[in-house]
Length: 200
Image 1: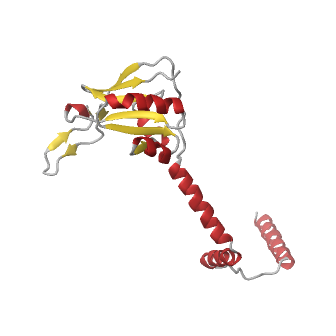
Image 2: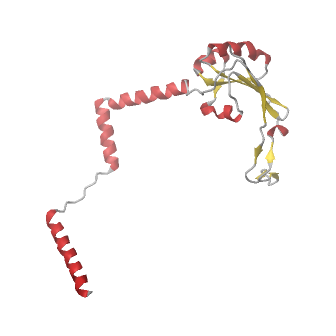
Image 3: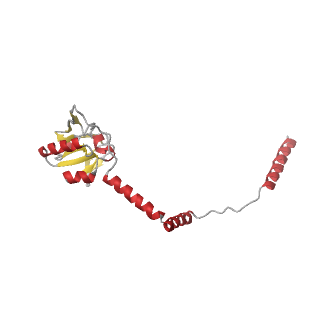
């Protein structure tokens, strides 16, 4: 056993020595990452490329702000009226500023039992002239209207309706289970009432 162990160690030693003869040692030199970045920026600035990049970024951001990514909500020729329960389930106990319990974990709360939502939300795609005309014809019968875009130019919609909002990533329309636009949303008792508009 000792002989076998010595042979193995001897082979490893010879192998190590042989490998050592084939490769030289070189010092590892790493550039400071900050220096690399600053040099790159300096080169871009000197070439005028940095100014162009800044301009492209600003234009892209302005375009996204002016015309955010539209939703995939469609129109309908057979509109429906439906209702959505706004109740939420509390994950943990909630207390007021003075320490009084407001709600317990697991409790289901309907906000409309405590507050009234007096606004009317109208969801529509401002890129669709038919929807624009529908909104123009309908919104006068509602009070305190909030215009919610699901697509189109914010600037152009503002010129028609004043202040508008955009339903980014369909955050609101998903919560309200909206499938078609235009749709009108109001509080009806303890639920949301969603009325779809027909677009022919």
